[in-house]
Image 1 (cartoon, rainbow, N blue to C red):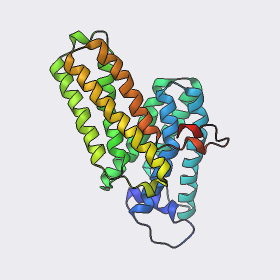
Image 2 (cartoon, rainbow, N blue to C red; image 1 turned 180 degrees about the vertical axis):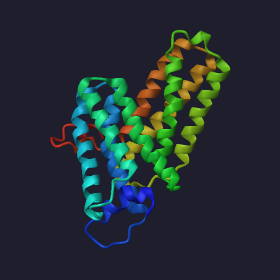
Image 3 (cartoon, rainbow, N blue to C red; image 1 turned 60 degrees about the vertical axis):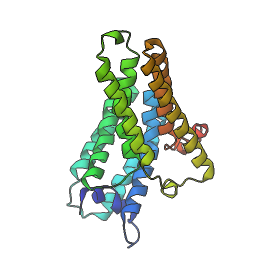
Length: 252
């Protein structure tokens, strides 16, 4: 059985002898990301108290994955290496959050996320959030550069190329097909998705215009708004309201 199925297909078919298809696996991955995104979002906002509260739901979700996998396997079957890596990175992320170590928290969360992305690519799975995550590296680099006071020393040609990469990445996101049914979304949530998608598209246009005008101070400000728009777009896919007290329901 392929790695991607080892991770998710079995947990979806734990109780019944049903047919496991790619849609089932995608739903399981979406549920994991719905728990992962609040931790990632609050960490990028430097709000580690809220990240810690969200982390308990993520940790619980992963424990469910492990427990259901074990129920379906003989006792002498070892955990897949991917399980071991994800468990380790998840544990390190939780420890970093509790210690207030923001940089290491972000590193461990990225390790965890990239592990699952690599598995999906290995299995040639079309997963909506992957191009969204791919966009982050170029976008955050552009934002950091735009906000650098030493920007005048940057090679503007190289910077423009990086900005273009962000636009190309966003184009791939816009061309991707979103199946709202897999995310369990109704029309109200779809409207929120469209609104934040439009906001990010608009902010990208404002940023490009500021860069074209060569106004360093202005595109530094636009860069800050661009990152905020990206974070809020990602937040649409998280289940902030899934925490026990429902305290974060307003995020979505």
